[in-house]
Amino acid sequence: MSVVHQLSAGWLLDHLSFINKINYQLHQHYETCCSKTESTTSVYFDSLQVDSVSSSGACATFIASDSTTKPENDDGGYYEMFTQKFVFRPELFDVTKPYITPAVCKECQQSNEKEDLMNGVEKEISISVIEKKRKRCAVFNQGELDAMEYHRKIRKLILDGSLQLIQEGLKSGFLNPLFEKQDKCSKPIISPLDTCNLSELCEMAKHLPSLNEMEHQTLQLMEEGTSVTEQDFFLRVIENNSSFTKVITLMGQKYLLPPKSSFLLSDISCMQPLLNYRKTFDVIVIDPPWQNKSVKRSNRYSYLSPLQIKQIPIPKLAAPNCLVVTWVTNRQKHLRFIKEELYPSWSVETVAEWHWVKITSSGEFVFPLDSPHKKPYEGLILGRVQEKTALPLRNADGNVIPIPDHKLIVSVPCTLHSHKPPLAEVLKDYIKPDGEYLELFARNLQPGWTSWGNEVLKFQHMDYFIALESGS
Image (tube, rainbow, N blue to C red; front, side):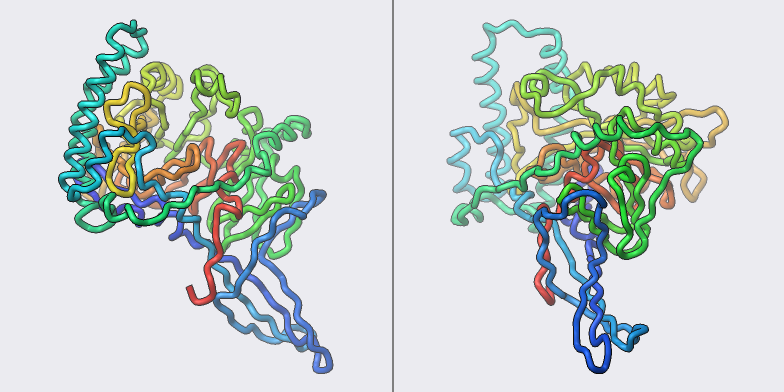
């Protein structure tokens, strides 16, 4: 379970635990003793090679951790099956200190955990006062004024709720006071190189033949050695319906596909295969690439305009009473757009606003709570698809299940950009347990979910994982 603690304020999550409890096991088949007079060994990896591309990319080292012997084959030999387990690189969640550490915070490292926690809050407030004094002479634009007013309204619930969950995390040992980690040498985190630019590959799909709108396009990766072409990635939803992980190689790069997962790799101009999938979804999680000044300046990430986001065909993808969850930045312009324009255009009624609070492994906010620039929290807007003929979602007692407002999701964030925490376990009380789930603009895969985006395999790259030693 990724939920470490659950209180009335919300949840304390362990994102790394959620990833590693996914069954990332790779089966490898060995054929031995082909005949009585021959003694040879052949290895068959449970993987899929993309045709017409190079397979010269970095290969993983496979270490057998478990083995079973299968019956004789047709040639009198035997098959052995080895299972290799992979886990996500733990250093990618090694956030021990705030991203912005005020100089005054150095003194608090010598205090005990409770004093460290409370003093940190007081210092954040004092730092905020100093920053505000420096900016008094500046003229705030309307967006900044709106953001300050919004922060003033939710500040207390963010602070009080986070402290409750952080204190539980400290008591249980899930979080550790900073002074316990002072003597440890922290190594710089080196992220894997993005050697396969998935978003650029999606441009290929625009030159492929258009799909028949009624054609059902899927490809199931069930059999070992299935051949996959580049075109299959853009014109079909790819399914791994097995109970084990599959490996695909795309442009020389290897990606792990978790069991019971499916995905479509494309950009917003090529969503027809998802519509042809002939499924409607009970939960749709959306993480749009919001337009902002820093994205424009850096030119590192693509973004969508509000008009383009409105064109996402949610009404065609949503089942009755579908729960729609949209990640949003703290810009009031985006919040108002979702509530006043986007959701109404999809016939979605806003029912709640939640907050993701990002902390260090010692329980500090990653940014000062009252920082005028970056806040340690982001928002999620939850809504229900409204249909006249749809019955409300009910629990076993026949009562309508309300979604509470202003719940907190507190977690140590991944150091990878836009790697959001999992929502399956925090939403389970408000969704169908056997429903169909969809994530849009996804960058990773989850068992039981369909994922779509132009970087949908990004965090499934083999380099983000490590192979466990035998017997681990």
